[in-house]
Structures are given as C-alpha cells and as structure tokens.
Image 1 (spheres, helix red, strand yellow):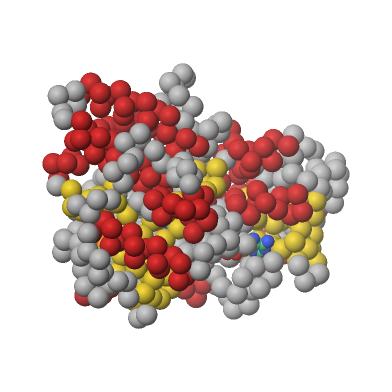
Image 2: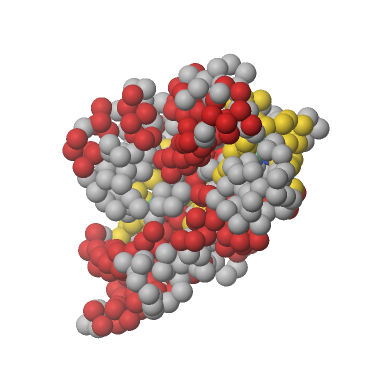
Length: 498
Ligand code: 6YU
C-alpha cells in the first residue's frame, strides 16, 4: 500500500533528506525530492578557503550528546574527532553560551585584561539566564530581550559599580554592548529588541560541548544521500506553486508546478523551504493561498541574517590558546546593538571572531560574525571593499598598522534567493501558537477537505530546537511519521479509496 502513495518533498536540506529517509525505511517507495539548486544540503554548506575546509552555513553540532540525532548520526558515520565522542564532552552543559578562552580587544587598540571584562560578562550572563525564565509566566516586564537587557544592565551597573571609576564602568558597559551583538548573531536577529522576552525560554539547549565536523558538515549530507536511491532528487528544479484543494470532498491529489512548467501530481507534499523564502513567496507558492492564521504566524516569526567573514593571516595576533576574539567599541556604553550610520559604519556590528582550531589543520584562520541589516548591507559590497574594511578594523583593534589578511571569504545568506536570510527566531509578538500553526498541515483542522495534502517541515517548524540542524532533522522525521501513522491507522476499506 505505502508503495503506491506518491509523496513529493520540496527542498533537499537536512529536513527534506530526513523525511525521505524515514519514508523509504517504512516502505514508501514513491518519493521524490525537488530541489531548486544543483546541490543537497541547503544551509549545511561546506566550502574551501585555499585548501582549508570552512563552513559557509551551519558550523557546530549544538549540544552533541545522546539526545541529539545529528550527533548520533555523525558518530555512526565516523565523522567526529575522538574528543567529541567522549562522555566528558557530552556531559558539559554551557547553556548555549559561546565557549572557549576569549581575547578582548578594544577600539583604542588595547587588549583588555580578564579583570576588565569579568564583571561585565558575569552581569550579562546573569541577565541572559533571567531572560529564559519568563517563559510560561505571565507578565514579563518588557516586550523584548533587548529592552530588558538594556534597562537591567544600566540599573544594575549603576548600583553594583557605584564605587568603580567612571572609565572602568563605561568600558564594562561597552563590553556588554559587544555581548549583546554576539546574541544578535546567535539568534540570527537584527537587534535583540526584535526578540521576544516572554518566549525566549522556549528555545532549548542540549548538553554537550559544541563540536564541528573535521571533514566538513556536508559529510553528514553525503552519508545520508548515499543511502537514498539514485535519481530520487531532481536538482535545479525550483517549485513555483503547490496547488492543493481546500474544498470539501475535493479529490485527494495535490499538483506541484515547477518553474520549468513540469506538473507533478502527488498524494502528499512536504514543504521544507526556509521561512525567509516562505515570507517572500507565500502568495505565489500556494494555491489557494494559505489560511490567514498560518500566514500571520509566518509573518510574525522572525527570520534574520547571520553572516560569516573568514579571514586568513600569515601569523597569529591573538593568544595561542584563544578560541574567541571579541571587539569592543569604546563609544558604545549606551548598551547598543544597532549601528545608526549603517552604510558608513556597518563594520561596527562585527562582534569578533571564532578561531578555527586546531591550528595544524586550519592554519591562522578566523571566522568573523556579523548579524542584522549591517550583515545584509555587507553582502552588497565587493569582496575587495569587505577586505579593506576588515584590514582597517583589525589594524585599529590590535594597534598594529602592518597586519594584512592573506585572503577572505564571506557568506551571503540574505541574497541567496532560496534562503533569504539565515535562520529563525521568536520575534516580539510571537507565541507558542505560532510554532504550532507553522507545522500544521493543509488543509487545517478547520476544513473538511481531504487531510494531509501539504505538510510543513524545516528548522522554523520545530517547537524548541528551531534555528538548528538537529531541529530541522527532527521536523523531517516528524512529518514522515505523520504520514506513516496516517496510513497505518486507516481501515482496509479507506485504504482502497485513498
Ligand atoms: C546548527 C550551527 N549555524 C550558521 C549560518 C546559517 C545557519 N544553522 P535548508 O535551508 O537547509 O533547506 C531548504 C532547501 O529548500 C534548500 O536546499 C533550498 O535550496 C530549497 N528550496 C528553497 N526554495 C525552493 C523551491 N521553491 N523549490 C525547491 N527547493 C527550494 N545550525 O545546528 N549549528 O552552528 C548553525 C548556522 C550562517 C545560515 C546556521 C546552524 C542553522 C542550520 O543550518 C539550519 O537550521 C538547517 O540547516 C536548516 O535545514 P532545513 O532543511 O530546514 O532548511 C566574539 C565572537 C563570538 C562568536 N559567536 C558566534 C555566535 C554564532 C552563533 N551561530 C550559530 C549558528 C550557526 C553558526
């Protein structure tokens, strides 16, 4: 029976691949994936800087431990370093905060001491923990994480550091601005003012010290793809419109119309396109249009940009054990995460760098992080301009006028036509209901038409692991399971009709 059911999956990122895997395993052989680009993986994208393997998209397995299906698969395929497999690594819980020994440089060319930054970091992490605790309790004090952090940081700084000299106090608040910008990168948001406070605690972290794939994240995709039959994916085949049936007693078939004019009839379609793409193209991607409550949730949930700028040097200018470099602007003691003069000063949004480790494998390569509209503007500049700005920035913060990057490479997720940004976050005004609406199949329960015509997977449809690879993978399995249990619950008489 399952073999006769025709299922089309739109998008060959990890969610689409996971859905296909699970369906095939359960006897659904008539499965096809339509992918807009010429490759699998979507936002899992490994590239090269010279001979060095770099990640243009997803970087880490967040929370690599038994509960994380990406960790389990990577371990099964032998893709991880031995350290990541140790029980010790799996049990470390850092609650999603950046990890590893940091260096802090300031805009006057000074390297800040641990003492300078410790009090600021302590206050910031205290506030971040509090932000997660409003979830499920009515009456959070502000609408956004940014409002709360800014207000509380200033108030507590005034009380706690009242005996500290003004220059030190000001510097500490500048460090907090840097950490606020790091949060923008982590959340993929333009400003933390756009991230909802009441729902912030909905995102869940898993234990385990984040780890990378030494051979590249795409190794996971290659291994999964090698287990799918040849020809299952049609590449360079963008879907233009999914025609479904909202009318009562309408026949149970969906038509998928491709850009090249091909029309494919299916019993079910699983849509895994990114939320950024849905926001931009929902009105043409579905016919009839999406029900209003679903559309409003697509509009309410946030989808921002987080970009990387890789920079290679001949030698290191950071401490050998350093894993994260923070750049602190000394004129930002107002606790800010947005740059007023975006076109001239976009580089101020670059929070700093993660150091690619180990040095024997990566040489002296840093990965710079920049989020928001400043990151989107950066994408419009030539590589030459970005390189020039990066060089000036590093010279200023190190006080060394001779440092020159050997080469750079940046990501451009906002202008990627099939992604339109990086990943989702719960914006102000969102509720848990929006996530439920995102994953609700069409027609929705409010309709009497044939059920499960169009199903939705992808990172932005996971209730607590949105924005991650493991979240996306789990949504692919979830939607496959929805179909598997639908067919296993049908009576024989219903099966012959369907
Ligand atoms: C994670 C991480 N990570 C960084 C960056 C990005 C993301 N994520 P897909 O988009 O993959 O697939 C959809 C497909 O649909 C795609 O192939 C399209 O081409 C196709 N499509 C679209 N339209 C179509 C149409 N019309 N027809 C047919 N096909 C169509 N996740 O776990 N770890 O480290 C990161 C990161 C830059 C962009 C990430 C990370 C998110 C994941 O990549 C993402 O959730 C999943 O891959 C999505 O899979 P999917 O299948 O849902 O969609 C100082 C200093 C300090 C430094 N601090 C730095 C802090 C930075 C913190 N950042 C963390 C996140 C990172 C790095």
